[in-house]
Length: 102
Length: 483
Image (cartoon, rainbow over all chains, first blue to last red; front, side, top):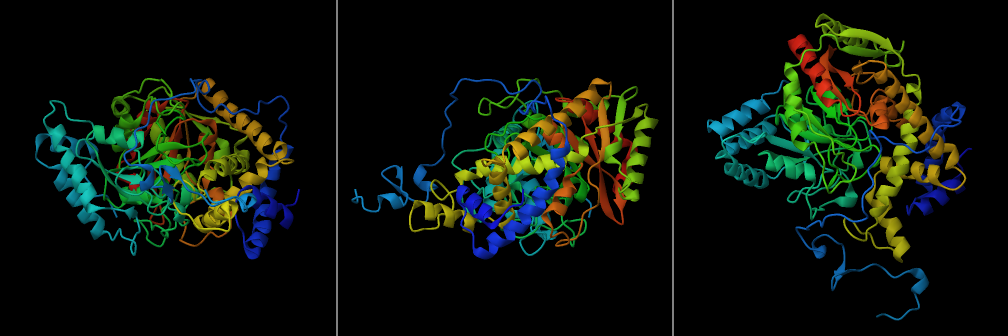
């Protein structure tokens, strides 16, 4: 399962990473080297072995889908890159280029 | 370079009696940081050390002085790894993408330290987002090992380890995903503890790989580490993965005998390729345990050699998901692009360093359609086999395991450029993270002047027994542990 430059470009797009041609080419070699070592796992007989890892003693506890409030020491505009009227501003989606400015 | 800090017990007692003020203690620590050249152009231990913040927190200790019983960490300065959220100093994870970010909330472990009378003492350098084994992969440049400044301190919590090893503070907090406390503890000649998965709250610890991450403790001595671990352990409503299991008095384990207890010596951790000088140090340590009445038993953990491939699939897979949040929208760096997607890609490629990008790429690949079963699912299955190895050995009557912490002493800065070769330095530590069991490293001697670490591994929530062995070995080795 050798990684190709097309694979690297596809994975970078999934991961929202912009790569230069030089970096993408280097990653082809790096990923193939690293993943080559992972091939040792393919020889292990895992028939009947659970794929869910329960690393804690007795597994993780189930809880209600809620939690205690987390008080914030400073407001959103103290740490968000761009805020207006309590909302975070982001660039326009390219698919909305023709939409009118609100 | 030996530590000049007082012990946690001494600082606590002296601060309570008023013979030393918390302000005097932190001023001494600040002076020590200068004396050892801990700054950016020297050992490069701290990424933030604001004298005003530290002294303000020390002043707050006065409120504890009137208590009849001294708070457990009264007046103790504690260095903090830069991936734990603090309210005053920035939390950057050693990354450009979080440069200048100050968290709006505080990690539970930091709150518990302050409530125990401790003084948070700066933020320490680390491999970016805890991805590394040398503290060379930091946006702030590499940290140097105080014992041998041409060597790495280990990683990823190298700054915290160096702060303790340089005698600036008696204890520090780090984090573990695959050995990031124990490996630097071994390289720097100090004690490093990774607790059971679920023992310590991770609320406010920036997530790397959520099924592996744990907050850990560095100490100049076993007792320093035990006292700090007692304070930060326990259930936290803000972290649903914490277990509702009582916290034992770890510092009380020093009085426990190890006579009649069984130490497992896993043969896979003593391969023929192991540096014979490290093997000799481990054998000498085991002999000390035998002299105190412990039984040494050879055991096998047959899937050990698969731990690195498993770890470097599972951890990057989880990281690729956890680090998706750093996209320039809500906090940290934002690099403008032509549109929203362009902003994501520009921000992440500019903000992350090479090792983080490499792991995100690996993680995204092994989770992607067509490869999930071959890599991620397979790795999770083998992970269960590794955990079953530990369960089997402990069910067979072994109380703790003893192994070398690392296959080599600290290597030179810049000596390892191949990523996979760097990953192999975690070969004896990642297994405990994969199985969720507690483990700790402590100094057991030196090779060519460089510290060697010995590792205890215990069953889930077996920290008290693990500390009993650590105290016993520390007592038995005495100064041999540092020579």
